[in-house]
Length: 249
Picture 1 (cartoon, helix red, strand yellow):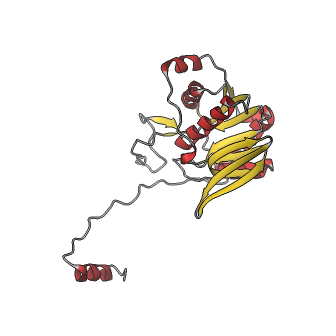
Picture 2 (cartoon, helix red, strand yellow):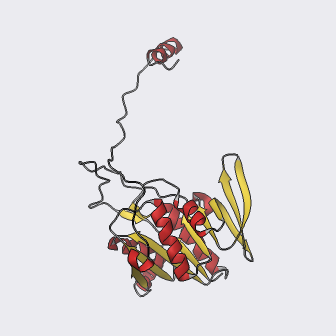
Picture 3 (cartoon, helix red, strand yellow):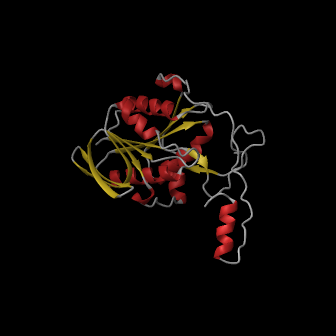
């Protein structure tokens, strides 16, 4: 195949404790460390390995968001991606709009494979890959824990409730990846310096002919309820009584 598109989403780093804004309008991001969504990092690592095996010619990383997302795209370029595309917008995007943006990029770039993380750690929707496949009218393979190719066929081992499932899909296709697929490489300083010279194209939604008409509007964010103090019991009879008091037995 010639080209692989990989989505990189800018999210609050997974090591940071998320705080809701005082007015409930969203999550606090000022002064907070931001990173590539961990599942997307795995997606990029897999795309790079495919290229290094000689099964693809180019890896293009894509991010949708504000100009600050250039930081994550530069990290993707430092990992080894050939080019980067930032679809710049300050509007909140729902999964369907993001899928439409990726479809427009597929048409623009003539990509044969799109690899995405199975979900983002901020909204946990796990919807974009499936919606993209439906819009593109191409096969999809979700939750991939192993990915190999035989000509124009991708063989995917995916994790399901009952264990592992093996499926084959014809290219072009969409693949979303799980945690156990690989371990992303460490970015070295020389690679960071080289990444500054790699091309990073900035596009608008108008350039792609995509209209922002979100189907879902988030109106309020609330932190989870605080944990209550546990109850100590002396014996089994006390445990049963405590459970009865709570209406659990």
